[in-house]
Image 1 (cartoon, rainbow, N blue to C red):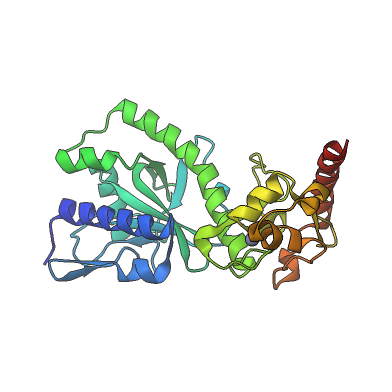
Image 2 (cartoon, rainbow, N blue to C red):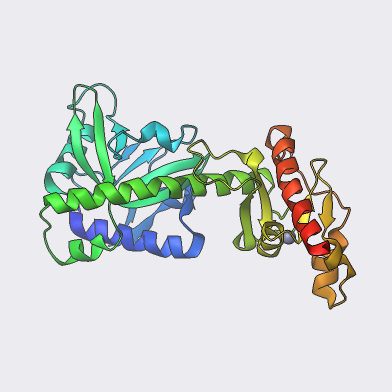
Length: 308
Ligand SMILES: [Zn+2]
């Protein structure tokens, strides 16, 4: 027995919105595999095996597409700014491929799960199949604004040219977000989800800070240009209250060391002076010494300005 396609889809998007407000835009695989219940039926959002996924309650059109971790987002970006997604296998008539063609013909919204690291997926929704090429076995996928779902809930939507242009624009802006999400997940995992200065362990209070500001390097987010820092230490690092030497030792700015104030200043900043930061388990993830050196020079310059 199938349930009404639109109802299932809207329920899935609602459920996703709730999960995102609880956990952020990167969700764990187990949660997505479990999904939610509708009319006593379980609706998973992904499966363990397939990239193109249709839960049993839907008749024909898939609910989601998924990219496994390991590739970079740019691998999936075409020169036209639209996402490339491969057919399942080599048979265009496979039911998963036929399902996505149907999604394209009907303008049906789907969910895209982009694997940022094993077991963790960045969510983009809604996405639409806008082109299908059986010769290269490739779909083109565009992202739209989540607000589109309000329109979808109210009526049947015809896809006009302006939608395509808007979606192309939105899809292009998604790239930076994907980079940021992947960077954050990888850096926090490398540091076992703790601040590398004070060991604070609440992920909600942690950031992946860049050692060298990454103004769209275009490259893959590299853990060795990152540090897991709590909000306080991220801000302190960015505004040169402290610096980290290439030998991983923290230097607190001399004016700050001379200040007298409450326990937050003492424990939060002054006590860190001359301490070594907490390093990732894997040497490959250690902060890059050259990048630390460059950043430390900036710190010294700022300190000299303060002393002058
Ligand atoms: Zn901290």
